[in-house]
Amino acid sequence: MSKKGLAYFLILPALLALLFVHVIPMIWGIVISFLDLNVRNIINWQSAPFVKLQNYMLVFKPGTVIFTGFWRSVINITKFGLITIISGYFIGLGVALLLNKDFPGRTIMRGLILLPFVTPDTVAFSFWRFIFRSRIGILNDMLKSLGIIQDNIIWLVGDRSLYAVAIASIWKGWPLVALMLLAALQQIPQQLYDAAKIDGANAWQRFKYVTFPYLKPVTKTLIIFNILWNFNAFNQFRVMLSENPGRQADIPALFIMRQAFNHFKYGQGAALSIVLLLIMLVFTGIYFYVFRVKSDS
Image (spheres, helix red, strand yellow):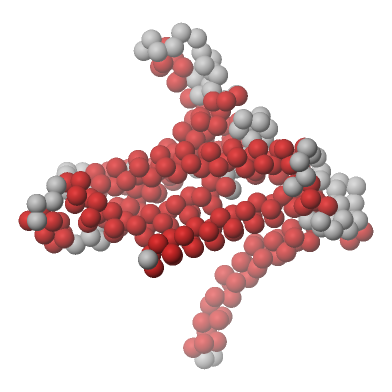
């Protein structure tokens, strides 16, 4: 076998996994998004009525339940993403700058900060759900003991529920941000800092003109990854708020799941998934275009 043939043979398992896990389900989703596929005809899906773009038109038809629910969920997940991405980045940056300094036990601390990230989602978000419980939750007991509140606050229902999940998600996600930024910080030559000090640069100026330029590539990657992860958020909302969290905290993944598997409208669920995918593709394209233009200018 030639070297090229051996290379193709070695990557064949990964290609097959990619085909069966991603490509085929995506094609299947696109196909059924044009069908009126429901619980009555799913066994003989080939006989499901072809409805052309009807499932997609519901997403863009004002006044329909699909239009109202889906776009409200998109607004909620956008708000959630802004909170978690910005807060998580600055927390991770602060921790990375701290761990980049030389102090006793630094190696152990670098390992310990990964504990939130490596904790399984079900365990982590079940723990946070217990913290935010109104009657038996730790948070309300702590706030009452400090005299900040008098009565229990309901965190997991209504307007506060989105922010409760955001806090839990920030706790879960900032260690990865810190680790990636720390790796970038360790690539900065110490000579640059020494030269900046000789030129009279203070701590803020050294960060602005030396540190931050080296962090830009990693920051761009972190932002786009977090945007995509947040738009696909599911576990934290499902564990903490159940599959129907209410209009204040409904998100696309839960809304699509209910349409497809609770209401048994598989065609509509597939169409909503494709629309969400297109939204993320458009946003990603704009994001990379803007940063490419800034890099070229």
